[in-house]
Length: 236
Ligand SMILES: *Cc1c(COP(=O)(O)O)cnc(C)c1O
Image (cartoon, rainbow, N blue to C red; front, side):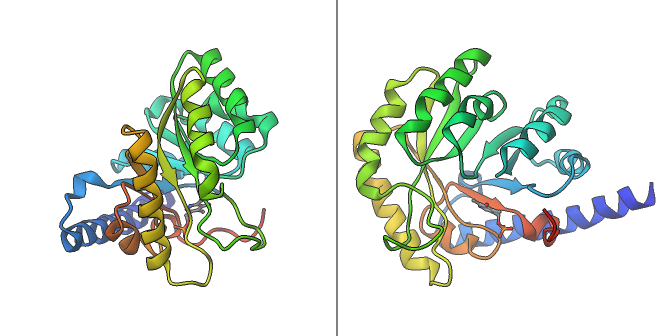
């Protein structure tokens, strides 16, 4: 069990560092650390790591690929974790994702809503939904997320569907740009959403490299992978 205990030590040390960064960023921004939830992104890492993380007090994990997430969530069903789906979503997989995800953060088009609602109904379990909004300039390659102007209609579609709870927004800072103005834009977009949907209070933003900026701009959830688990294996 030496391997397991050294991996546990490694994860414990990294978690402590990340929790310290979150606490420092909250102090800096005059926010309570209780207002920011850490979602540990476990994609590419085995269920054994998820188990260790749960034992170290992690409550929320994130995955971005349906097949991998489905298997891992089943393997770890006894841990009582909240599973966040944060990846690109095909509409024909939406119901299957809602069958295990507690939060689907990457809802970027109305076409996904019916499937998510169906999956949530089949499981008799409300699924929390975040709308993923693009902070990239239009036309950028590999861009994910809805246009800010499409959010009002998308938010209404989620609210009108059964068993889905509109919780807020998710975004990724544009690659190769200063994340600060992007997260400030996100905060503005969120204010507009809140005006129509006062319970959509969550903002999921910030990853290993930019969580401080996200917290400063008001993020309620940070999605941290490599700073906790180490660099992801390069193979698929
Ligand atoms: C992989 C991933 C993360 C975590 O990224 P790190 O840089 O490893 O912290 C966060 N959000 C999304 C959407 C991701 O796909």
